[in-house]
Image (cartoon, rainbow, N blue to C red; front, top):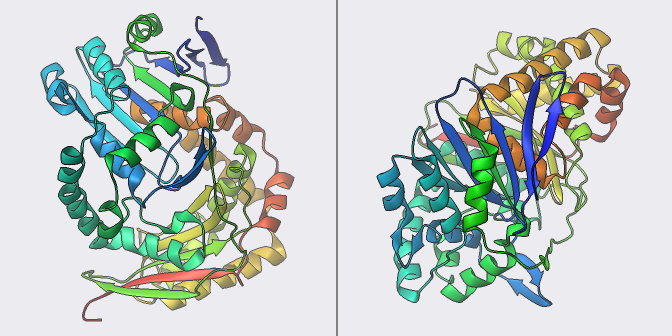
Length: 424
């Protein structure tokens, strides 16, 4: 079908995009001067997609199934994919997030062989009762590791405090009880529902030719039928479930995560909404902001402090997190800053400074092969091009960011998650 060239004059960059005859979207971003290549293939299927209708059949799978499936796809009747990668010298990995599952490798040689392994991996499911049962102990240890991770628990405890029904509140890997319910039949149902090439994106950046990628794809990809899967999500009230949650783990300094829950639809936020939020948060709590300096001066935060935006299907929240000796005092200071911001808004000067900072980060992201390829996957799943994000940052106005503030940061709809030391 051939590649479409997608260019951006502002950046002087371009990449190649095609919808392959198999159904797979392929994005190739050649990078001059790079010796290595990074490839990633993702499916629009993550831990939140546990309830769905596929080919007219309603299916509800155990928590952690998407992550379990990620582990099992590395096995085939011919052996373990990692063993095959070891022969090419490529570094391979995979990850499952709330919204997607991705398989990846990076290499400096034997690119063709490594890409062939990746395309074989996602098209050759092999699940038996014996191999599925064997994985329970491995994933059980991974679950325990995350249960002991303060960084992970402070975040997941916040999600569980904010959300009543949305599956964002459920650990990506599930728990020991839920993974014990996973069978080969369940894994095949999820694979057939979501590992359809029409639901997947292959993105490659670095020392690569798009025409070599096309040749490999032509030889390895099997045609997929049109996708007939719809994910189902429960209704979620606006109000948070709990105002405060606390857990004790082995930490030297207490940690906090403060979430401002928002109204959310089944649609993902637009790039314009995400950009406006990024600029708003940079102006409000970026390292050059008045509130950041105030929190530092009062010793309520340290260099670990930061802000983030949680957003997906049925969930949206602004989050502030970091280490502090006084979690409740830090949270109250941030809420007081929000109340002041709601009254005065951001200044035009702060907007311009924040916009330049956000734009600079967006442009510098193209220097990383892995970041570029991952952004390509995310852009395709959002139905956008890779350069839309930069263009929107460049053209967003003070008025648009100010208007965005009206829908965000409700200080009366917050949850605070705290991790304290065992002996505190």
